[in-house]
Amino acid sequence: MSIKFHVGMSTLLHVIEVLGVFVFASSGLVEARRKKMDLVGVYTVAFITAFGGGTVRDILLDRRPLFWIENYEYPTLIFVFCIVVSPFFRQLRQVVTERFILYADALGLGLFSVSGTSLALAMNMPLFVCVMMGVITGIFGGVLRDMICNEIPMVFRRGHLYASCAFLGSWVYLLLARVQDVELVALISAIAVTVILRLLAVRFDWKLPG
Amino acid sequence: MSIKFHVGMSTLLHVIEVLGVFVFASSGLVEARRKKMDLVGVYTVAFITAFGGGTVRDILLDRRPLFWIENYEYPTLIFVFCIVVSPFFRQLRQVVTERFILYADALGLGLFSVSGTSLALAMNMPLFVCVMMGVITGIFGGVLRDMICNEIPMVFRRGHLYASCAFLGSWVYLLLARVQDVELVALISAIAVTVILRLLAVRFDWKLPG
Amino acid sequence: MSIKFHVGMSTLLHVIEVLGVFVFASSGLVEARRKKMDLVGVYTVAFITAFGGGTVRDILLDRRPLFWIENYEYPTLIFVFCIVVSPFFRQLRQVVTERFILYADALGLGLFSVSGTSLALAMNMPLFVCVMMGVITGIFGGVLRDMICNEIPMVFRRGHLYASCAFLGSWVYLLLARVQDVELVALISAIAVTVILRLLAVRFDWKLPG
Image (tube, rainbow over all chains, first blue to last red; front, side):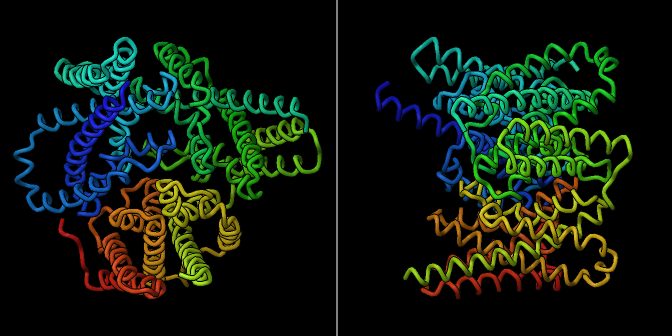
C-alpha cells in the first residue's frame, strides 16, 4: 500500500468517525432533554453517547491519545452545539422526527462499528476480537448513556436487531478487506450492509429469538 | 525459581483463570435469561460477568493485551456456548439448580480472586493493593453485571459473606507465598479457604454487621 | 521554574489531593450507610467516591501508577477509617450535619477539579481538555457512586450549580496560570472560586436553565 493511499484511507476513516460523532451526540442530546436534565447533564450524555464507544475501545486496546483528545475540537464543538441548541429544543423536537433519529442512528451505528473493526484489524487483532471491537465501538455509547440514565441498556432488551447488524457488518468488512485490495470498497460496503440491515430490521420487525 | 517451574506456575494460573471464566460466564448467562434479554444481551452479560473483573484489574494495572484478547479463543467459545445453550434454556434450568450455581460461583470467586492477587504480587504491588486487586478480580464481574441489569450490586447489599471471603483468601495467599517456597501450595490453600469460607457463610448465615 | 520550586508545587498538589480524598470518602461512607449497605459496600462506595474521579482521569490520560496505588496508604487508611467509624455511625450522624457535608463536599469539589486541571496542563493537554479533566476529577467520584447506588447521577439532574462551579474554577486556574508566575496563587484562587461559587449557588438557589 502506497503512503499516499494510506494517508487517504486514514483521512477517510477520520471523516467517517467525525460524522458518527455528531450523529450520536445529537441522539444523546435528545435523550438527556427527555429526562429533563440540565445543561451539564445534556452535554455529558451527548458526549458519552458520541465518544463512549470509541473510548471503551481505545482503553481496551490501550490506544492513546484518545480520539476526542487528539481531536479536541470535537468535544468543544459539541459543547457549543449543546449550548446553542438547548433554548430551541421544543421547536427542534418538531423538526427532528422519530424517523429522522432512526435513520441518523442507523448511520452512526454503521460508521462507528465498521471504523472500530478497521482500527482493530490495523492493530493485527484476531478476527473475532476485531468484530467485538467493532460492535463495542458501535453500541457502547448507547449502553453507557442508558446506564447513566438508570435504564437497562436498550440494545440488550428484546427489540429489532441492532448489535447484530454491527456484528454482521463487521464480518462483511473483514471478508472484503481480505478478498480485494481497495479498502474503500470494503468500508463503504460494510457500512451499507449494517445500515440497511438495521433499517430492514425495524421495517420488517426482525428480532432475535428470546 | 527455575524457568521450568515458572512456566509450570504460569500454566497453572492460566488453567485456573480459564476455569473461572467458564463458571462465571454460565452464571451471567442464567442471570441475563432471567431478565428476558435476547442473545446479544445474554452474550454481553455472560462476557462481562466472566471477563469484567479481570478487565478492570488489567486496566487499573495497565496490563496489555487483556487476558481475553491474548486468549481470544475464550470469548469465541463463550459466544458459541451462548448460541448452543440458549434454545435449551428451559431444560437447562431444571438441571442447573440453585445449589449448583452457589457451588460454581464460590469456586469462581476463589479462583479469580487468588489469581488476581497472585498477578498483582508478581508486579510487585504493595500488599494491600494486591488484596484489592484480588477482590476486584473476584467480584467486579458481578458488580458490572448488576449495574447493567439495573440493580444495586448484590455484593454490596447485606447478605452472606462474599467479598470478605475473597479478602481473607487473598491475605492467606500472600502469607503462604511469603513463608514457604511452593507457590502451588499457596494458590490451592488460598482458593480452598475462599471457597470454604463462602460455603460456610451461606450454610451458617454469616453476615457482616449492618 | 527551579527544581526546588517544582518539588514544592508537587508536594502542594499532593496535599490538596489527599485532603480531597478524605472529604469525599466521608461523604461516600454516609451515602452507603443511608442505603443500608454492609461494610464491604461502605468501603467500596467510600473508595469509589474518593478515588473514582482521579482514576477515570488517569485512565483517560494513561497515567500510571494510579494515584491510590502510588500512595497505597490512603486506601488502607480509608479501610481502617470505615471499620473504626461504622459502629459509631448513629452518633456520628448527629454530629455530621447536612451543612457540614455541604461545606466539605464543596471543598472536595474545588480541590479535586483544580488539581485535575493542573495535572492535565502539566501534560500539555489542550485547554478545553484540561477543563474537562478538571470537571471529571471533581464530579466522577459522585457519578460512579450514584451509578452503583442505582440512581441517576445527582450532578446531571437539575439542581444547584455543581459541575458548572468546577468548570468555571478550572478556567480561572488556566487563566491565572498563564498571566502570572506563582502557581500557588493560581491554585488557591481557582479552588476558592469553585468553593465560593458552589456555596453561593446553594445559598441563592442558582440553577442552570432547564
